[in-house]
Structure formats: structure tokens, C-alpha cells
Amino acid sequence: MIYTVTFNPSLDYIIQVKDFKTGQINKTTYEKILPGGKGINVAIVLSNLGHSSTALGFMAGFTGKEIEHRLKEFGCSSSFIQVKEGLSRINVKMKSNEETEINGQGPNIQKENIEELFTQLEAMKKEDILVISGSIPGTLPDTMYEQILQRVQHIGCKVVVDATNTLLMKVLPYHPFLIKPNNIELGEIFGVELNTQEEVLPYAHKLQELGARNILVSMAGKGAVLLDENGKEHRSLAPKGTVINSVGAGDSMVAGFISGCIESDYDYSHAFIKGVCSGSASAFSENLCTKEEVLALMETMKG
Image (tube, rainbow, N blue to C red; front, top):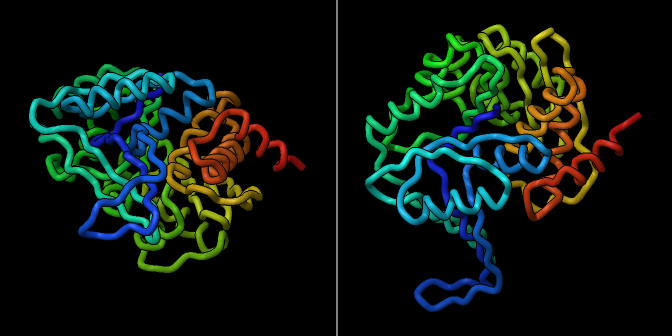
């Protein structure tokens, strides 16, 4: 089973307003509500690619129930922990002359809620895959990533981590199966600017020396690189297409890589290309990628 953890899931209220003005009534010309959060995006894309997963995390109130309901519509299972105080977030993403985002706070997560999550994770099996991604809300300790990897280390399951800077660096001693920084995040870790695949690879090697098994670095329109646990370097240009919406592209890459690993018995060359094409397929669409879109892009990458 694949499990995803989203610490602070949301309902994303996406709206378009023509010529937005403050201090007066504005009417929307477009609106859509989607379940949001990096782990949730991974779960949805996995479902689109034909893989079952269970979304874990914290939810509260009627907004939390709606997140569960909408996930179910995408074919995703969930086992969120119910938090008594507060509401799961509503994040407003407004497109007008400028793009504006207003993000909610999320529920007040208590120590007993955290322990309940640990209990869920400790029931995992060696053959399971755990995906932990996204930021940590203020009600959680900043050591959450480390604590989770400590708790599941004895199980031997594969852990995928998609986090930034300090959160990422602190989990490396626990040998995560996969980490996925982008080139900007990787550069920030080491205090350098990384613009080319050649510049990225030496720093991927540094992360591997620090404990990561596979390092997948996304580079938007410049493609991606993978340093696999066998020491092999993989490079790919980005598939050709028009970027419509880059939100969720990195999460789609993670899901595609996992899907490629499962279906090929961990052939990293195949998993890498499927990850790249999954990320691009989402970027080329208003929604998260479908299996058909990913396979179509993979065909263009052959030869």
C-alpha cells in the first residue's frame, strides 16, 4: 500500500475576477473547488495512474469532511485524524490582473492527534511506500519529519520526502528512498545558484553522500535529473508543450516516479521518464494529469 501524509490539507477555492478592485464588491467569472495539499495531489495522481493509496493527515470540521468527500470522488481512500478544534483550511486562489492567494490557518492539532498519526504509521509493512510532503503548520513541532522517519525506520518501508531546506536535510541520516528538491531549493541548501543539469548533479551527489538513496531534481522547463541509488545519473529535457498551470507538477512527478517504480520492478530509467512526463502532463493541463496524458507524453520521449 502507498500512504501519503498531508499535515494541513485544504479546500482550494480557485476563482477568476475581472479587474479586481479592493474596497468594493467583485464578482467571479470562474470558480472551482478542489482538495489541496501536496500529499493529496500525489494521491490523486496515483489514482489517475491506476494505483491505490491512502491519504493520511489531520482534518477538522465541515471543510475536513468535504476534503474527504472530494478525495473519494477522485477514487482515493483516506484515513484522516479528526481534530476537535478549528477547521481544515480554505485557501482562496484568485486570478485577476495579478494572482492573489489567501491561505487559511488550519485546525489546532494536539499532541494526542500526533500520537494517533504515529500509531497509524507504525502499523505499516516493509513493502509499503510512505510519501511525506509539504510544509508543517505552526501547531506541529518542526521536527515532525524526523520523528516520522525515526518511528518507521525499523519497519524498512520506502519513504519519499518532498520538503525544503532544513526539513529535508534533517531526514537524510534516515536514508529516505527518494527526495525531490527542485534546482532552486537545491541551490538554497548549499548557498549556490544552479541553472543547468551539469551544475545540479554534483550537489545531488552531496545529498546522496549525506544519506538519500535516490535524488530526483526537477528543473521546470529545463527538464530534470535523477541520481539513483546505484550511482547512475539520468538526465531528461522537458517534454514539449504549453504550460497552463504549474501547481501540482512537482507532486505529479513524485507520483509518476513511484508508479514507474512499481510497474517496472524498480527500473529507475523507466521510473524517471514516467515521473518527468507526469509532471509535465499536469503542467500542460488545468487539472492534475491523467494516465492517458502521461502515456502520450512518454511516447514522444521514445527514441
